[in-house]
Length: 311
Image (cartoon, rainbow, N blue to C red; front, side, top):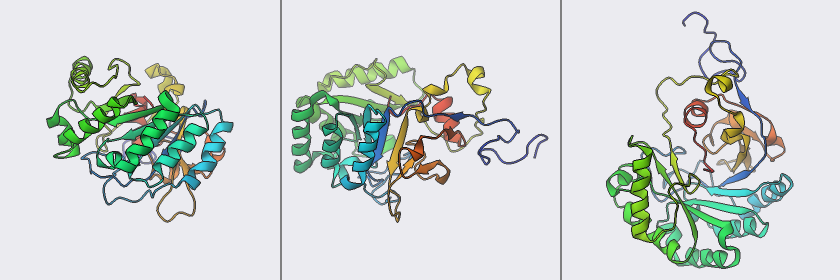
């Protein structure tokens, strides 16, 4: 090892490879509680951060009974929003009931979906329409549409995935659902140009999304497992002029159920569902302790990339 290195990068919870104090992030306020309803998905993207696919069940379906105690505990934490992610959430048999439970408790609800066949099944459509009628704008569906062109979207999501997503999005818009969208920045085009492309697409579909609202059109940086990202030290906050309160784990946690586990667990964030060192406990109270930024994604996606799954 070069002089000054005592261990491998991202291997020690408290100290970087150069012996500096590793940064951590305190839970300022649990604004968003994420429920990962399972990693099974109807498609397999080329670069899915959680490796969702038709075969990946490393995170099994959360049931409504699994979710209930966490929703009740989130009320005590003053949580504003419940986020639902996967996998494809609409593959979960309990998805409509889980959504209903969150909305009945007064939370705002954000559901991430590819808007394809699982969402377009008649039973699911009927359930969504009922939720829309009863809870209106407190329900937002955020559609994963990686690019405004078919070619780039299908480069990531596979052949035949673009039009079904547009069809699902148009169905939601026609019934007055509040919509948002999530894209990627992997093609390197200027942000203004990318947002203009989405604007033209949404206007053609009759979809009401303000593309300049970064919570309504979220453009995610890529998470690269290669390269040599820097470790985040306590000095980085002042060097980067960045407030740790802006990092995702200062305001969110995610509930998952690992395959074979007796009960759900709370992970530090949506990006690190499989990392045991980011498993913070079985309750939100246990998971309210600070998170040590001991992963390359903490650096590349959150601190340096500015990514935030809540937008």
